[in-house]
Amino acid sequence: MPKRKLPNPNKSTSRCTFQLFDGSAESVAERLLASLLVRSVNGIRLSGIVVEVEAYLSQHDAASHSALGLRKRNASMFKPAGHLYVYTIHTRHCMNVVTQSQGVGSAVLIRAVEPFEGIEFMSNLRNAKLGEAQSFTATQLRSLTSGPGRLCQAMSVDLELDGIDLNQSEEVWFEPPPQAVLNKNWTAARSSRIGISKSVELPLRWFIDGHQMVSGTAAAHSAGRSWRFLS
Picture: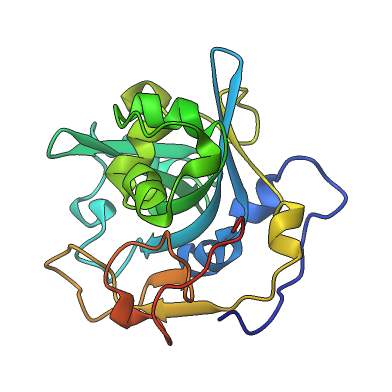
């Protein structure tokens, strides 16, 4: 079960600003936990509470796309803090928040969110057709937004969003933790990253301990996966 409540750093604002994204990939990764990722699709608001992220560094990280240097495919990763870097892998998309200054090449991968708004629309985008949101089980919700590829499909994120400025965009942005998060006591856990073959020893994955939407194995949690913010 959750152990402690973390403060809301943007309590007075309705949208997270540059300050959230500016800093090392490690610091931004931890700050992004429990924030609200928002996507607007044809005027429909989709959102999810961030529960799992991974940092990818500009130096001494062979798993980072920036390790190859600036290329056409990874150019957005070298933009200033607060831009979105979207890439494809095995026909699926992954979304990353760029950190630090122009030309550095560091980012945070959003691995999983807990669906918050527009859940039925997400279900349709995932071709899941799970029924009414009120009846979704934890397993069904995991099938929507647990894992970066599923998350991008459920929130209609593709290469058209690569390089956008999260500080200004009306298509995708971040907001402070919703009240459902502030009402819970929870703690962050840290581990090595998932699904990579290089720099596997680096502890650059942060996730909300015990949360049911976190990808990977339940054994990584202190007491398994047993709760979520909206249950």
